[in-house]
Length: 265
Ligand code: PLP
Image 1 (cartoon, rainbow, N blue to C red):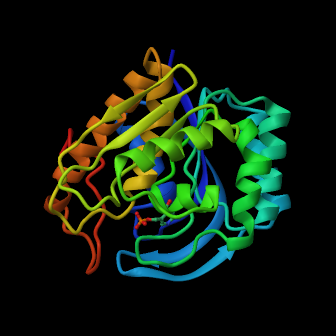
Image 2: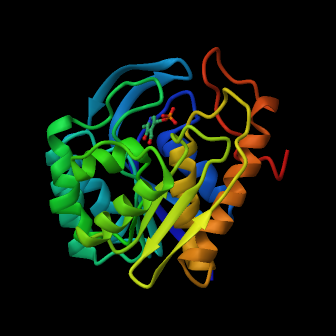
């Protein structure tokens, strides 16, 4: 049976991040994609120019339109902008009892521009966490969620991953890309155990939308895999290929996108 996935996220008119990256990822991984827009973002490979948050009532209307019509097997949540958006998304996740929800705890773009109001970080933990299956923070995001300093080594990563589980996360993929090391270790924490995933760093400036792409790949692949371990391994393999091929795209003047269709063209 064909898998239908939903992305609830912001937009990137230059096509490399947000909803555009999610739809490309779903398509590359053989999944039918549906979308709910939380924010219109005037951005490109050089940075974010402005953000136009969608009215929470209209986000609810988009979710009702999709969810009263299409069977959704998995979802990915990206940019949420503010606490009111978090509230309405949590309400709809509860109302429709959505299975397999991946929350990318988006806070800042690589350009440093904010994608979530600072005062909404607590709502991610208190309002949304109970309704999601896995969260995918990078090191600064994990630190913000836990109100502590970012991990600078893998021992601290393990402590913070366990702390996020203790705070109510059902699963945590803590991304170690910000560590000052030649490797880029990611750690998966589940109540039944933990697992280290390692990938070599790829020397490219073209990494716009990598977090969006990884979380969308997790949502696309979870229904096709036996468990989260297999899902993370497969999603990381896809992202690795897309990043390794990024320079062949050469889109934009800044940090360009990864090549979502590297297996095809
Ligand atoms: N734009 C949107 C709408 C996003 O949701 C995100 C991240 O989730 C980004 C941009 C970030 O892209 P970058 O990888 O350049 O930080």
